[in-house]
Length: 215
Image (cartoon, helix red, strand yellow):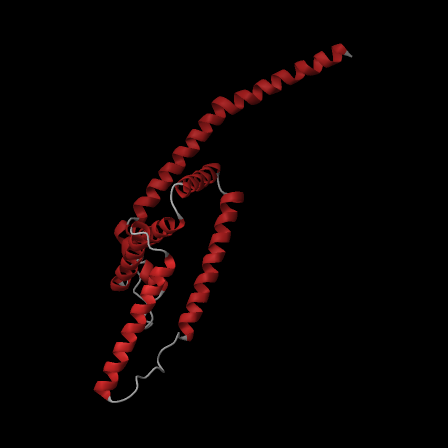
């Protein structure tokens, strides 16, 4: 069953000429995914370890791009004796539509998840979410925004692949953990909460009798 889940969870990459965000995150386009991860790592090393600020790094990247384009254009003119064709440069309508739909769907998923955790989920889901946010605040207090963005990017490109590969096993462990949490809550409710409720019920008539005697 796990093998079936594994094969079904890896759909083929999109046939569009432009690399989609989902293909890069899911490592369906390995060269592009490696390039994105390598670029993030290089930027983090240059800015965090060597101490260069964002404007300096952005200026270097812009200088490299303009110099490369200038050299390519002059070589193109020497070889083909004509100006480079720039008509094909641009963002296609399908790519813009895909990006807009992805942003809309991501925003809706986040809003639904927030509402579900806050209003509909079990207590252990809420507790796990609050604990995770608290740990994130602790980590954020000991590091800067750039490091958090780098960690988020690495995790964002690693967790989906791990989830797709071990989807069945993760769901099995999740179900076991959910059952154990429910058993623990039932035991806690039976041994602690019910006794407290019974004590409150027993003590309340005595209080009413004392109040009547005082009157």
